[in-house]
Length: 200
Image (cartoon, rainbow, N blue to C red; front, top):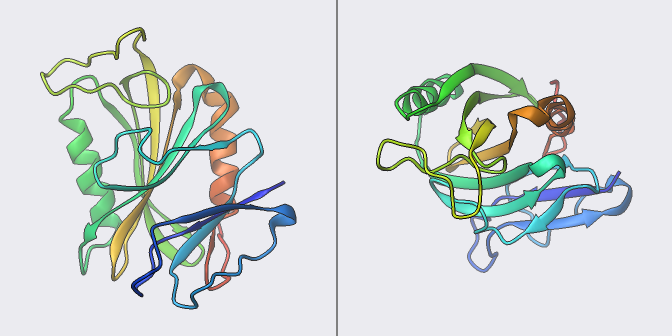
């Protein structure tokens, strides 16, 4: 299975954005900068990279992918929040989502991945499968030419000393049986750049 390498921005100037590459046989990445901080996970060949701005995110998009059955994956970062815990991230995100029209929060918890605590929040809301529908006027609105369908969002928030990193999957709720195991498999493959692996 090909391996998608996700590297967050370096602390050194000159290293731009996020590096995403396919590595045959899931070989370890060879970053050009030893101080690059990153996350690595395996994605099946059925996932293809798209422009990072394809899907709206509440932060700086780093990479985006389209998957089977109308699924999507976006990796983005938000501003540093020193002292923020995974539990705090989970509670804040779940509370924020609860106040949006038509949103049902189904999961809010802390999981231990690769030796670190991360937030996991899952919601089901009106959307178009690969994204939730905007609801700035208090009512979910479908983009032109698309119909609203129940859409599941699975978000992992990774706290740290620097920017908070987020991995967010979307997929139609009707495709949950097909896509959710792939999300869990990707999470199980997660590696931090220091080589530690997920205990998911």
